[in-house]
Image (tube, rainbow, N blue to C red; front, side, top):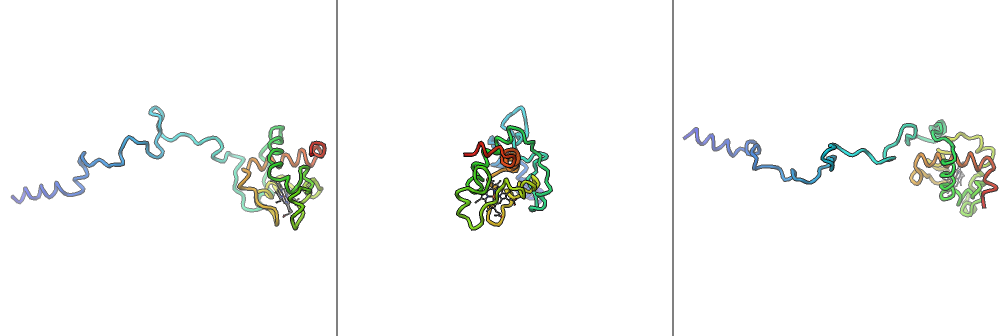
Length: 175
Ligand code: HEC
């Protein structure tokens, strides 16, 4: 009798009860679990979408403007990059700095501090990283563009400022 009650007690012990097949967890269904593949042949997670992870050479984190100043430009100033930079400059910068970058944009004229002429010798003498950093952190009046422009996009803008605006090629192109 004593033996039987011991068996019964063990049977209903929660730890033992869980071991039985009737206690399968509700979470274990045919639904797809986090990080599980939908493709039966290829297990595991899908690789990350293109450009969702910073690629080597375009790491996005810089501490401050001083650190940015020292950062080398990882994007070659080829035709494609300059064209993309032009497109972005017209959207994000020209309102203040003007289409030709001379600091004569319509919005800029209303500010307490006139946006700098990006074609001036002072800015010409700056490093690529400085200009990139100015977009990243903003200035006294100028807002930061780190949320609007990706790290790579900011380099495209730098390339446009250098190759077109500062070389004087834009004066002819700018309206
Ligand atoms: C809201 C107006 C505004 C917009 C938009 C703007 N800027 Fe500026 N920017 C300024 C003002 C004002 C200054 C003067 C310095 C300051 O504010 O710190 C300035 C200064 C700068 C400087 C410093 C130049 C130097 O040699 O010291 C750079 C570089 C610059 N801007 C680049 C850009 C680029 C590139 C964009 C587009 C992504 C841009 N700015 C968009 C207003 C603007």
